[in-house]
Image (cartoon, rainbow, N blue to C red; front, side):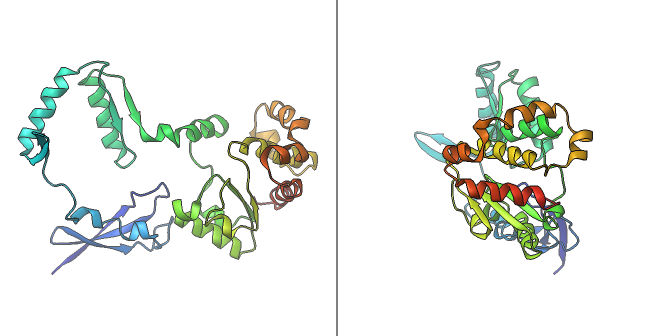
Length: 285
């Protein structure tokens, strides 16, 4: 009985871990490490290890179901396609809409939007990311020119200080959490800022528990302290930023002093100062 190993990418989160699907008789029967993958180096979280099981799950629908007289009944694919097409014809134009998914490929999402615009004649296309990640994509693109991280995942492990804010990395992106622990093992300081104490926060050297919605004030205070003490990378500011003086004008206001931000966020001023110093002086944050 011959086994085949097919390299692919885990679909569960945005880390991009690689693994080999184990195929026997054209059926996926397991997952094996992909040791040479630079993202996860052969390691996988529980989600990745069991990512394949849904493929052959007995609970998975393999035939269309059409509701008749209040109950779902099995139907042929031809029946299902005919029913869908007939109903689509009733709602052509802007009265129809399509919902895309983060769980399919870029090519499949492209085909969906093409179908929406060219066939259904509707511009109404939505996506689950609009409710969560889209705002960060826009913010990152405006600030850094790209809606993605500006360094490699591997860089995390060699950092001297990490500020982890608004994410439960150990549960949401476990293999990135592994890089954080590698950094900690190498002596890095871990600062965790979040309204909740999560499994990620329990590994931090300093936990900053801020009131929900006050994270911007905290970050502005960090910038004020770093600038006041001259801890910023002056060469980087000079050569790689635009309108920095406008940012400085805002963050240097008394509103963002440690004492005021302590009242806004609920974090002790001394902890804010400590975090800013760690981050500003590590040389590799």
